[in-house]
Length: 474
Image 1 (tube, rainbow, N blue to C red):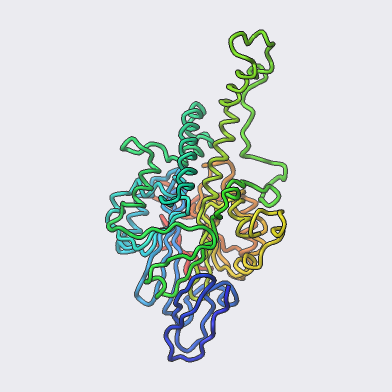
Image 2 (cartoon, rainbow, N blue to C red):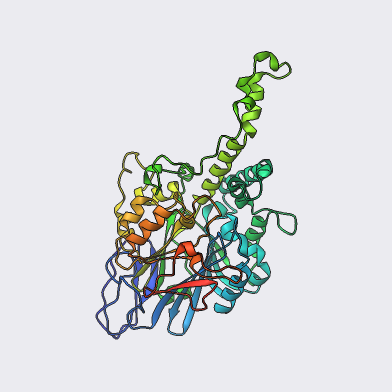
């Protein structure tokens, strides 16, 4: 990232410069030297930015197992708003309607930018459930990962196959019950059925494409692309950099690297499907004459293709592939740097951290760019609700800026040990306790989760209404 030019003159109001690969305007406050707006030296704590005229707020809504964030840029009395995902799945607390209503009122039914990190139900279902409310909201631009580009035949093919696979798996796994985690994984890709009889995720995607009060411009990004910010956000001093997803579909398929995950036990693979059937139900347990009409190899193949553990493995792979499509975005404003990682898993992270497939020639160490970015971030939206497979150890260790804060939108008892306690502990330690969880605030039908502990006090977090959302103020 390029260093910002220092301006000593108090008479100059605005200086144009480049941050990374994105040209942006950064307003300067009078009487003080400007802070960096890209990763580097500069502000390290909370409070208003220099001069007090410009501030930033991240609002995290509690909806259950899902992501719903509102980023607000304040320039005096003027406010611009960015919505990052709006969805819930697996454990729905019934609060997303209230959250959308509050968000709509807070932004005056105008959003400068809507970002869909990826098409999982826990990130987009709110657009379907609250479609009437979104029809009243004007949006300047919409950002999506390149996999949603209607002009990209490869992207269309990938999404079509994933959705078809998930639909088949949902039906085949249905006997395991609606709360089975692998059923939930498959249904998270389709969103289940909408009131109209179609996929609720498709309904949400339709809203994102054509369901706002106006017809906003749409952009589809991969790592390294130059983002097109609305002019109002540029004028306010915001810049952005696209760090993921990679354009290489082989990296999208890279699901996990156990050595870089926060495991309670290095040998534990707690989301590995169980062996459900005993040997009596295995084809190889029977003599050859038992297969008079069908060869034993064919029967074995048929059995293996529908065994619950095999189906579960396929559901898990499809789920993780979609997570790896997540947009990963670095925002910079007034010397503060904010990293939103969606649900990025290993293939997405390794592209950002190592510049390609980890372990291959030239990709064995973290790149200077990744190191510079992570050591200077002031805020991290914890990936994948605090799952063990979404925030690598190397990334946490590189988050070195004093005063860096984390927010994790999560819900216990949705999936097996989510959020992952060793990860939560590592983040809390690295951030000196500045970690907020969405389940630390009440919603109408459910109080704060006692297991999450109290919301950290005196470090920038606030729950002004004592329910529904938590704010972090810069």
